[in-house]
Image 1 (tube, rainbow, N blue to C red):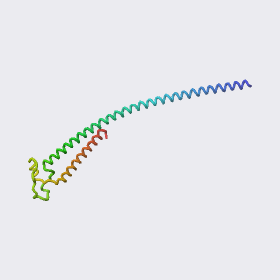
Image 2: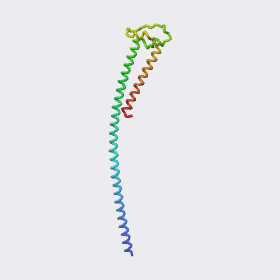
Image 3: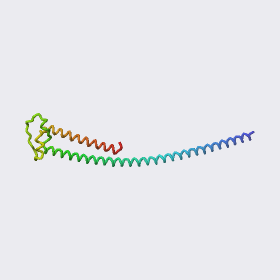
Length: 164
């Protein structure tokens, strides 16, 4: 009987050892497959990340280029606007200030005095000069409105160039 018990123990140990070896082999195989999958997933994500970073860099370059062009166009337009404002100021000064038709004035008997070099005398004869502070206030309002319009044109240009 001892021999049978001893043989039984040997068989049980052999089966247990075989099971253990099989279990370890299976676990190692599954872990290896998982590691291979995980490595492939990491490489795929790295490739996608690198591609997206390249797209982002190109988008930033494009954005900087477009924004620079819009800013340069805006500066050019503001310069043109300032030149127009200066020209307008000079024409107003040559005409003797901002004027309104004499027919709307409450004092038809007030004489007008032509000023300047004579090129505007026909115009001046039928008008009355606005008080200086009123003319200045109207001119400032007109200039401010022109600047706001140009500022909004820049925003509109930027929005359109960026696809909004």
